Image 1 (cartoon, one colour):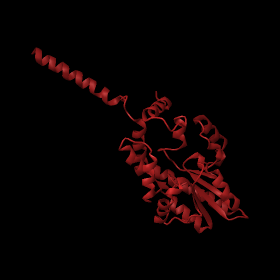
Image 2 (image 1 turned 180 degrees about the vertical axis):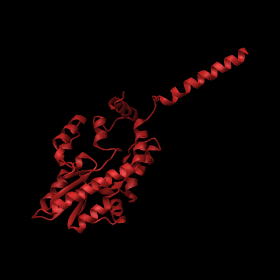
Image 3 (image 1 turned 60 degrees about the vertical axis):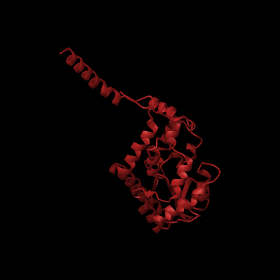
Length: 267
């Protein structure tokens, strides 16, 4: 009886301690990598994500129609980012996360060389609509010149309009897109800017701004969002994540985890 009593007590102790081990966050966890897997799941499977994208492009079409009613002395154009604005790179994030890794330039280049990213809901129909209304589309991206071939193949795979070297404007010397936007503005009337990152819209977001600075600039430019600036959702990466880490891309995975824990609110 005494032995049975001891065994029963041990079983009860193990049962009580089990849930604590599951619910706690181990010191060796990687919240960033796990988060990329979860956010990719949202991007790939959530109908709400699809609805947000369609909503953004519906607003873009409405604003384009409004702009076409106004006279212009120049050819009209829209400027768009590529990644997570109309091409879905979540398979890359999943590939990395399942290996316990974050972004790696060499693997990213391998992914873009495939030219296999799917389109984001609502994107292709909007750009075709713009082209049908004599509005040129300029693809201004921070993909490298070495990624031109794969990127062009991806555009042509889905028959995006203006898929040529003149309209595909990749990164050369600087990450800021403002000089490239100004080149387009010199010859065209830019009626819309589309992107998933705030630096896709204004140079005010360049130069690695802090979280508070970014929030303040959004407030300053509030009237432009949904009007000239059309934002697509991206929970996987971007300036918002970089600012979370103090714009220090050299942090280790555990340092990034610590930054996440320090910035989330609980109760």
